[in-house]
Length: 157
Image 1 (spheres, rainbow, N blue to C red):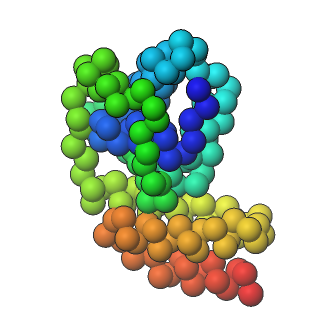
Image 2 (cartoon, rainbow, N blue to C red; image 1 turned 180 degrees about the vertical axis):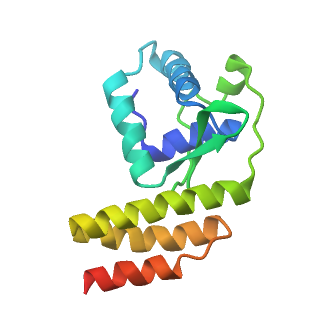
């Protein structure tokens, strides 16, 4: 099973959020139910990294647990992969409630880091991509990214 960013977001969205290990287990269960195969670990690791970079997944740090949750992010269009709809029952993990304000703040901080990195590298494509992400993030969480958008626009000029 090779999951897309939106499918990864769809799986974590079934639970509210999952640790990376839980996400891997959930996808393994779905892959086995789909066709008896296993998940390609390297492909999954690359897909998670790409989803985090694109803000389709975001990390949610919890004060009561050292393992962050992966949560459907502002650019995701969560879709549950075939044979994954019963995974919550199989794993026995209750839906998790998230502090949306804290999640928005931490994602905004991560966004600023991405902006800083893109400006430092002079990566024009990433700068343009982050402008779009800024609007998605503002619609997704109660944050104001106008200052960062101005920095991005100035860096593109």
